Amino acid sequence: MTLDAEAIDQVAQELLDRETERRDGGRVTESFPGLDIDSAYRVQHELLARKVAAGETVIGVKLGLTSRAKQIRMGIDSPLTAVLTDAMVIPNGEPLLASELIHPRVEPEIAFVMRERLEGPGVTAATALAAVASVHAGLEVIDSRFADFSFALPDVVADNASSARFVVSPYGVDPSTLDLWLEAAVLALNGEVVDSATGAAVQGHPAEALALAANDLASRGGAIEAGSIVLTGGMTDAVAVAPGDEILVRFTHLGSITLPIGEGAS
Image 1 (tube, one colour):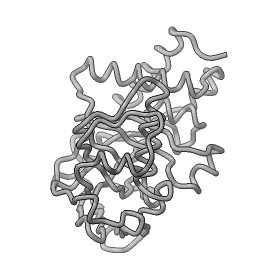
Image 2: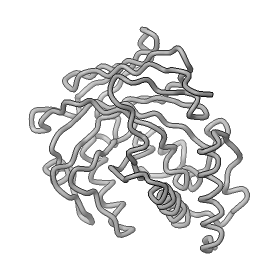
Image 3: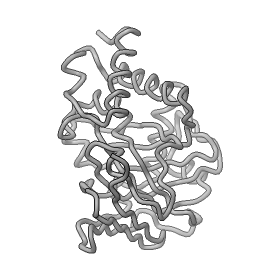
Image 4: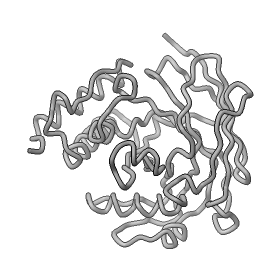
């Protein structure tokens, strides 16, 4: 049995409270066993509605669990989608303030800025890429509201796919000039390379991830709007960070992003 409206509100408020109070907790699927994927997306919608009511603006979409290894681990065969707001943006050159989050982790992503509205169903990688205005280097900071990042799939969907913060490079590249399947990212923590990957790690190709996002959103009456930022999914495993750390990601053609990790207000 899926959750009723009252339970949807309760779960959304609990997740929002955890984020606001910077605390984690157990899986909501344990307290609400009726939380299936459909209910989880309803929770996600309600969670974002409350953020928008508080003054945030929706600016884009992100994908989660785009790597095949992560999908197998979670027992799914396609990524999940979540929403980006302006409150998640870290301006280029500014630090991530770790005290604002619970247990942040960072992963490199290929980001798209959309030229045209992209609406499913039936979107292919080719039609998706044709709607892209520019491709950017990206870093996403994820921060689960579940203890030890331990969650079932409906939990993480409801939690807006662990969304927290992100950085996108200010200068984009024309997608027609890139082979995104081969576009590589090298991730370094405090000057030491910790991981690397190519765009092939993202659902086989970042444009495939973009098409999947458009088609998935269409199943719930949504679309990717013109001007939106789309984070196509982590290319590598996420790396835990703490105050005093510095993250550097260097792409083959998309440039580099440096993200210092600061303490911030307590």
